[in-house]
Image: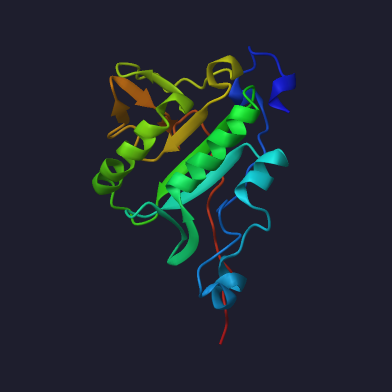
Length: 188
């Protein structure tokens, strides 16, 4: 659907369909027990992209496996990136906005561990010069065929490979974040 929009369209001008805990459609051997608590999706990542989803919420731990809180979702960050790049090869006028959350809150360790994997797929990531501090929201022309990485750590320590800064800050002043979860309370 993005292919039908002009290159000059700013991402901030769009209402972009996305999913919460994008990979929570499958789990490990405990899935039968945890599914009622952990499942937020019914389609695979590729099916979600084919259905028009362009914002994905990926939560990984230091081992680069995908989790929903403590629940392993039988997926890896490398598998996620492979699926996205397959989709972008087939649909080069689309873009995927990917929030990558450190599900362990280990910050430096997580950033260090994802760098080699990001480097493998570096041609598919939207980057800016290392010296750019604007956190400017790009136009479609800037991000077509790319992954726009959103990171909470971006302002403290942006991911930089070969003098290129990857992605944008998640939760920047020019963004409205609606990710406050208040689960149901149980009265006993």
